[in-house]
Image 1 (spheres, rainbow, N blue to C red):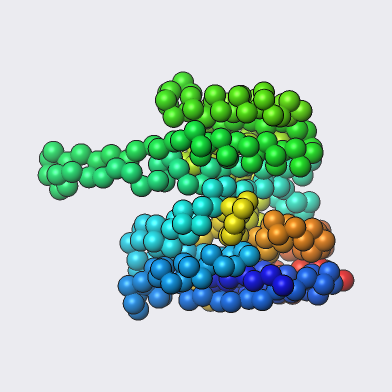
Image 2: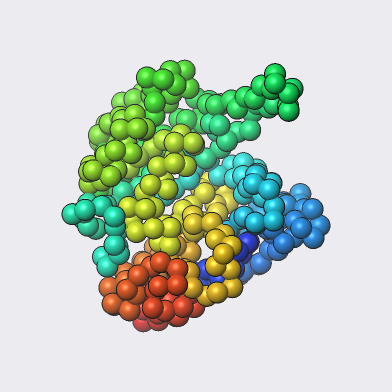
Length: 353
């Protein structure tokens, strides 16, 4: 019996979370997986009511779950950074979810903006370090509002943090067992200190413990070029926090858009959190018109990470069959031909067969 915390969150979050849970229920009923859900009222509306983002007591409760399923964080009436830092980043840091795992997979039947590229060429995974870099929050502003204002944001990298992310990426590449090629994405010619730590850790760990995995390196600017021109070159990419944030959004676009892009915030020894990466999209709230596939894929990732491969495969099979059915002419909000809940019903039907 798995215990899963559900944080529907803001905007379209509750709508897509509902469809993810619907498909999970259909697949789990066939594979015999048992789970218990507990919903948490966290997000913009709670903050506006009470000024709370993530109470300490709730954080302690989250430590006791097997997984967390998140819808979205972001509210148009709340200044940027308050919810992101107070809720999303605090969960990542406090629960030490030091890996952000982002599959970039183009499914048959989904359009990509890349000319002459298809599912055979777009199928790789990005492993992003999730707790260090510029996101660590080190720095500040002095003399704010004056002509002498000085602001700093410190890129903090540790050998411990980079190495554990690199080891996870090597292990994931080995388990994936596709091309067994791991590429380090960094910027060693400019960020010579912090990325030298990454570069040395990458090659020292690879040489010592992963001789079966081919190693490669590319600057982040070159990586973005090759993701567009030759995405088939990639198997697994490992990178630091900020660069990972950027290239995963590029990955989402080439795999068909934010409506199909899911991610996991992983603590391999603890509690992990899974989410669609598209955000709260407040202009679509309550309209039942957005694509829920990313949230459904997040449920798939959750089951996969928990070791329930059969359930994960059923969910992914449901997604693939729905996309191949011809019933979804577009994945753009308002143009799918089906409502959000109808897409969930379609996929749940396939996953439960």
